[in-house]
Length: 286
Image (tube, rainbow, N blue to C red; front, top):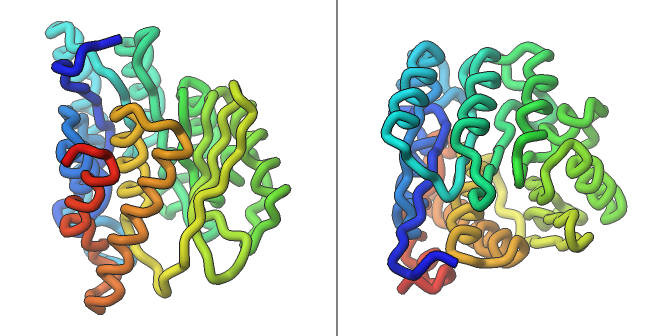
């Protein structure tokens, strides 16, 4: 047991989009607000995120990643968790595996958000073999956080739109766990049209739980990154998997609700910033 004075530290391996709230621009503030030191390993730099916005600039940082790893290793940096998200090239899958191998300890947590697809389709930037590579990355994770499209790709199965049956979701969770991770959190789950949320599975306990809330109209970019960052924040503040998923669902839904009421452009991300005070109350940090 670490003492209460120990500040948790994580490595966040994501892209950086200058405009449009996603990836590092949500992971850094959310995890930092939760009291966690967050060290960024950027995979790419974009002028904006890619969802619904054209004309963005894109700089692939694959060549910079191994020097980052070598320098951090030389400093003997230790991490309480490693959190990977959007990867900018196929080669980065191998580099992130090397990062895991370099910095994994018996006590830390590896969380992989296999960011590559949504709404039944692989992102246009990726070729089909990327999903196979992501599958091998997930094998090294302690916990994975795919949406249902990503789950289908990881399992090499057809994507089925919802609503879903409880049995279908439970089967998907168990099959994803067989890839290697002990814990699975599946997002975009709904059993009825008017709800949306997540389902969790812990292989060690065999427990499956559903965390659902009222669905808010519209499609919002960056919410997967907000959810995963909030989930990891709660896990590192010693909440159980299901408690962490509930906190992450509440925070994400509150951010969407605030954006919906303000009628701002959905493409630009959700207003998570003004929901942080309530998030910190749920984490019992204030």
